[in-house]
Amino acid sequence: MKWEQLCDDASLENLPYRVELSRHGQLVLSPRRSYHSIFQSRIIRWLNQLLPQGEAMPECPIETEIGTVVADVAWASPEKVKRNFYLPNWAESPEIVVEVLSPSNDSKEIEKKREAMFAKGAREFWVCDQKGLLQFFAPRERVANSKLCPKFPASVANR
Image 1 (cartoon, rainbow, N blue to C red):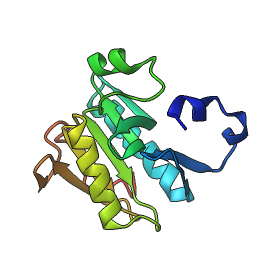
Image 2 (tube, rainbow, N blue to C red; image 1 turned 90 degrees about the horizontal axis):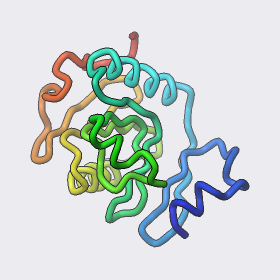
Image 3 (cartoon, rainbow, N blue to C red; image 1 turned 45 degrees about the vertical axis):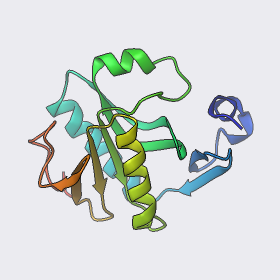
Image 4 (spheres, one colour; image 1 turned 60 degrees about the horizontal axis):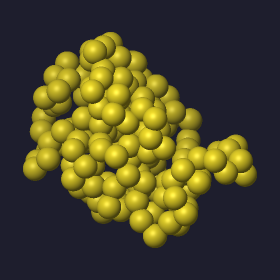
């Protein structure tokens, strides 16, 4: 199955899960808790405020070597938005990719997603834990804060 087919499948339209596609064409469904959506919203709000020249977006589908990965939040420059706007899934990674952790996530899965995003051109990968605390990663290391958005807070728990 291809990502575009999933997008056009009406039977999947109202699922209460985030849908991803493995490289083997298998559906990966992830349920969401309330905090997850709230943290996504807060991260988007901060990105729009601190990086208004680009586009902050939820649920951005990105084609990678591990399949179509859906970033919980992503931020992209106008150039990348223009190149990918009409594609069913992004052919390259936005500059910033954020994963909001769910209880079902494990560290190996997040590491694979991080590596896949950097392989597709991400400049930073952020991880937001279940308490709203953020970790920031550059391609080769964890960093104390974002270099692309240095004023981004270390927590979105009470924002």
